[in-house]
Image 1 (cartoon, rainbow, N blue to C red):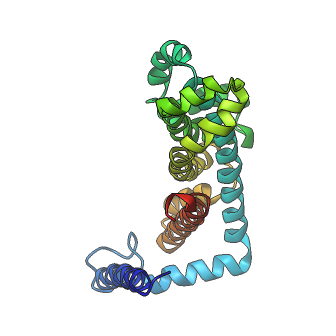
Image 2: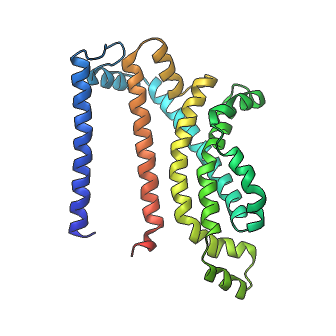
Image 3: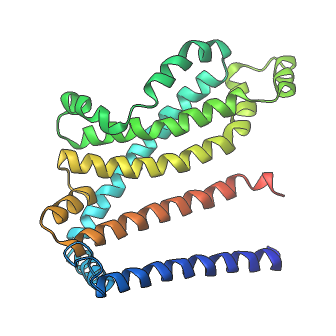
Length: 257
């Protein structure tokens, strides 16, 4: 890593921390200055206290673990289904012509709108939440995979025909390397969707998790507990996105020699 690149990353990190510090300062001023009632906007100190107490007692830690588990499992199912279907659709122009209208019809459906159907099938269960998370998080991966496989360079297709590669070899040796950047971007977006849908599912299905904890805190006007849950959700989203970003840079390092 060059010194210039390191200095640029250090400057970017310092600027990001500065923005975060400014937001926290504004939050502190708004809560202590009673710009908004503390019933709805707790102080940063109260939020930190609720966060530490909840994690020490174990209840908030268990809720966090349950939400992360649903997010990861649902995201894993979404990635597996999205990549498999996307590869099959992407390598065949005929399949795209037949399936594309149906995909475009189903894709805009919000995951929350599918929950009543999922509840009627699975009941108010953890399986229902996982099914809805997988449905909602599948689309970024599916569409990115279709795009990656459908836009293989024509010369590569000619090489595959000349070498008489099997469909499986075309997928693994030509299609997959070409589609990998799109797929990884879709997987990062999919993880965010999985977290959002998991929280909404916990709220609607009364499943243990941060979604249920935030909903109960809001109903009982425990603003510091509510904000502590929101802070945890933000931390989970940031950590998961950073981890996937690091994996993406490692897997695609051949693009930037």
